[in-house]
Image (cartoon, rainbow, N blue to C red):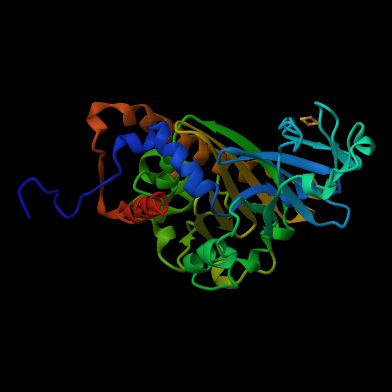
Length: 373
Ligand code: FES
Ligand SMILES: [Fe+2]
């Protein structure tokens, strides 16, 4: 070891350009977001045939809808005629078919080309060859996950395994019945920061004592700065006087009845690479979906999910929502504070990770492996 090498308690981060270079971002879109399973929409947002949502996945717009047989379908949101974007709205509902606003080619909910002006006078056209291009779909935890790869990676090994590895038990996440919960609140955050800064921030708790006063009141071990959430099977315990995972420690909503004793009064966080965070507490589940739109721009949709009865009864969930909403705002402000500096000469060769952040290096390695792959 030479004198100029970093001491072992500090290890390097990625260089600043990884967070700002449009070429790096384009490569991430191609090799990460367009290859891996991507959490696209809440299934209940496409609960009837014809209801649809459009989402940006890598460089593509993807149309997610429900067909007549009740199954969820996803397609590239591109008309096969001259390439117009088929659905321009972020969400909506059609009766029977999607009609292109340009020359009115019309596609069934299953993606088949069913009509086009003068189609009968073009008898040589094989309609089946001009349907919308399908995208792979899976449903898990009540979300529709899509994959643009021709051969998708194993959903079990890449998505489900993240929860199993983190919680140490395949059944642990099932006990929260995430697929059955209802959306009590959704907040969209426009974050002027690179998606990797958001992931890195979520993975560490070194910042918790500095920027999360409300969260560390509820979860005192977070004040120590160690990412307790990343020890396999360990959930951060609520403070003794706290009654619920709320902004003031007051009672929350009805507890999810199927969770185990050791899941009660604890908070678990899971990162599902590349763009999902799952937060589990006894009475609700918070799911973050990131949509990376540019090297310095990420949209984050955050859902607060409660038992359906809680939402239907009109129970006031605002104190539950407020706690993690504040955490989100505090986290995203921190990421936005870092983003402009990524371009500075001061950060040309990056910064450092302290020991409680060392696991972030594994994320950096993972990103590097994907980009080289
Ligand atoms: S581009 Fe869609 S019908 Fe012509
Ligand atoms: Fe945080």
